[in-house]
Image (cartoon, rainbow over all chains, first blue to last red; front, side, top):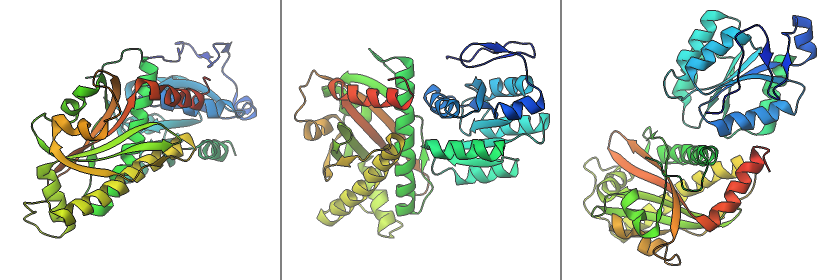
Length: 150
Length: 206
């Protein structure tokens, strides 16, 4: 799978491959929202990433599984996570719980498909901030990012 | 099992996700019609000569009901909704509020199944239309009662036997009553190119 490579240090590599130092809280606001995208479908990750890159926010990481998402969240501490509900291995709900255990204030938006109402209710109970339903359009993604960015 | 001649993993991933979205929409419509939760499987892709399509969708000798249509505007290809005959009986029983199901599909039942197929195909394509942000039109669906191996004889008469087609199938089921079936999108390799172009554009790669 084509993953964004994240270094083990406090520095992160952005999507264009340029390295940057971790920003301070004020810098993070000035630079927009730091987003982690989690979906087992590269197609979906790319779609979300392209929309976010058209704003002043940045994609700090991508994960193709729940396991990677948990690891990357701990390392990158993004402001916002787009998290697919259905994934092989550790699913979206379990991943959400792990992220919330690391940071109860984490903002996690679940990416769902039609017909997943029961799982959505479970995700909300586990602390999901919001959800968007596939196929989402550009405006829905931007609206979520703006809400987080204030 | 996926076969992928000339298609990259990235393209196959995009095609599977496309089928996921369509099936998600279709399953909601089906669920509303039968009043049951519909569970969908993971999409499977394969590239096969057209004569093998039936074997990939169901068992060759299994009696099935197929509701099929061709896409006319916005996308080229075919959509197929297949139910084993036993599932069609159970589905009809559910629609007619007969707990014991029914044992025969007459003209009235076939007409009802055709309408149901039209609704779910329409919902499937509505999901795709939203994904691609464009209108997709399809012909009024046809219905056929046959065995799995010969379903393509009805729906793909214009395609040569040895021409290869891409199938993206998603199986679904309900538990009570047990209804199994598949939604399949089918593209000849020549009609696939515009779809791949749309997907690349969607991902900002074209």
